[in-house]
Image (cartoon, rainbow, N blue to C red; front, side, top):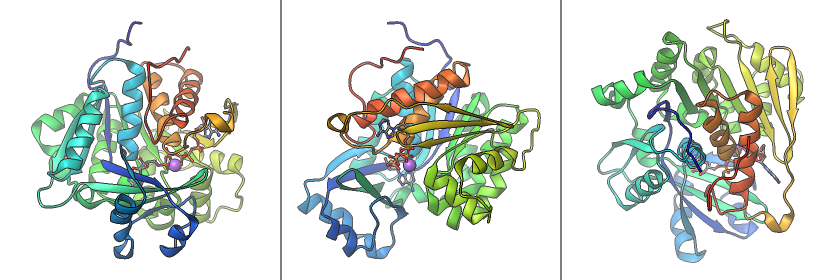
Length: 346
Ligand code: AP5
Ligand code: NA
């Protein structure tokens, strides 16, 4: 099979490189830490014992994670051409960082980590209860990303040379100045800037930096819960996804020549594509229960599949269908991992 033919470094992403520590746990494990089945939270001091407990008592698996890095790995897998995507994030100087780097590089991703000595690489506890998963991220080194890293001449050149930019909402908790810098570069060069709402807590607690960057955002991704959290934080009257999507695309935009697009996933229900006044639905092929390993990383894989086509200049229709293909594939594999060769047909 021939690989795609896009140039190296066309896509730049920034995010939190996290090693996922994933295990099946009983409900009382969540209760002990006052967590809910489908949470995505940042670890506080009281959550710190979770990671050791998972490793010692629950036969935990280690998987490369971090939302943006997941998406870019999946995009690379589908593109079958190395180094199309460049990733920036901060890690420690330890074994976990090595694992993350190996996984990313073997997927073809061009990683340029900022390294913070004396701080451990970030981890994310993935607590699986039946078909639910609860996430607790201990950002650790990932939280130390600074804009100086993007100002290093070689990294600056990578940012300037890209044509597409993708950053998660999660990164708003780490370094808004870096996000604004990338967004401004994209804007100045009239290149698409894509972002993700990432988790309800972002809209609940990080609305100010989210609102600062939103005018630059050409495509915004989210799932149902994330869209609803945004709407609630804005005191929008309706929790209806169609209303929320329309308002998201109409929200303040810096470059009116490129109207905003919103793409909202809703699990096995159709993906909604919002453009100006139109809403389109893209059906999801439902998987049989026995085919589902875990849905962890489904949203990230959706974005990865989307990006793999978007950077090739494909239509939104193809991008979204590839997003659904990629998400469906990783659901059949543990965490945000893939197996075999990609089989997406346009
Ligand atoms: P997680 O939130 O689990 O991953 P996700 O990619 O967002 O996956 P979800 O299962 O939550 O999917 P979704 O609800 O977004 O999408 P939807 O269900 O609509 O997190 C994974 C990673 O996040 C971890 O690796 C972790 O490291 C990282 N992370 C956590 N905290 C972080 C932080 N602070 N900073 C950085 N990283 C952090 O589904 C999307 C698509 O999937 C659908 O459109 C469809 O195509 C498909 N799909 C879903 N369900 C089905 C189904 N039943 N059958 C068929 N297709 C399906
Ligand atoms: Na998600």
